[in-house]
Image 1: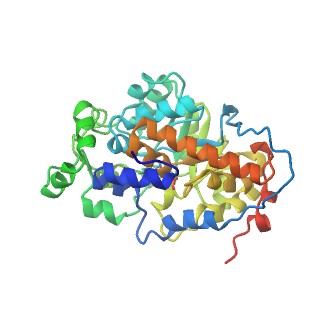
Image 2: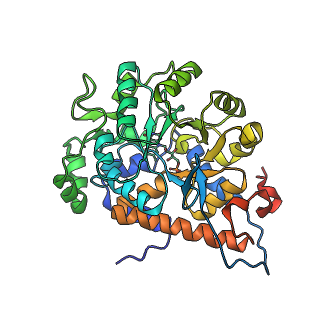
Image 3: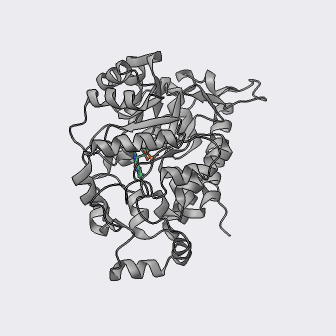
Length: 384
Ligand SMILES: Cc1cc2nc3c(=O)[nH]c(=O)nc-3n(C[C@H](O)[C@H](O)[C@H](O)COP(=O)(O)O)c2cc1C
């Protein structure tokens, strides 16, 4: 039995257990993958100030996101095709997050549907919306999320066209996988995945198949995205969606101070500094590079959250120190899920909590809400 001590251990096991096309879908960035890589490497360059002889006996990681209590400043980010990393993946991840006291976000492009997840958890989760050309479908999706008691809408702004990920093109990514020789040979090496998948009926885009005309069972993600995603999306659509939804709204994918001001003006409740985990615009800065200017631009007018590149509790602390109220994690929890199912997501969250807690203590702080730039060497400035 492998002993799991960090997110990297979960990643290695995920790679071993999930079919190549789905592992690659997770562990890839756009084009040269420079932005994808720099998200993590820039975070790791930020050093902590170690403090001593401070009473660090009683510590708390608890805070709030949108006024709701969370056990640590981390939410599970929306990720498409999660039910292909492990059968029923969205339901399992939602349950793990619920037990841990942190929010789960269901993607528009999930395998398990909104209603399916809602029936299997006890607390409300969040729903992530992609804006598609078919506005009636969007209205129905918003209504479905409300009917399923979703407590916040996460509107993703940075995927109105698809940034190319070479591996997905080469693998011919589709769900479920097409029965090509290469796929069949690869599946033969993944018996646990195959068995779990045979036991579940959930193998298609649960929110879409059966709800949109012309979407067949086996869907090429790239073709569907090209046809359906709406590149005309602009701030007046954000206003329309906010009105239609009527609840807490989170704008995800902001990388520029000027856009952050628009986000604050739009009346949204939170924005997520995110470059989609380096999956969209290759050549964009890392999110930790972009964060300080955005915090300075919109300050307390709107909650500023952070994602992309987090692979440890130390990374969460770095983002919080640089002004993020909270963070979202994508690949870290997907690695847990693809390695060990629900137990793996729980393991991922335990690892992050421990690393966050111990690092905060070494920095001489006892409450995550008191963490600021002063815990970082040189206030966390990234030298060239
Ligand atoms: C496999 C995968 C699928 C994703 N699908 C979505 C999605 O459907 N909607 C969305 O808003 N973001 C999506 N994202 C982006 C994540 O929400 C998040 O911004 C990103 O994973 C953060 O970077 P990290 O993976 O380095 O933590 C996806 C990311 C990954 C890795």
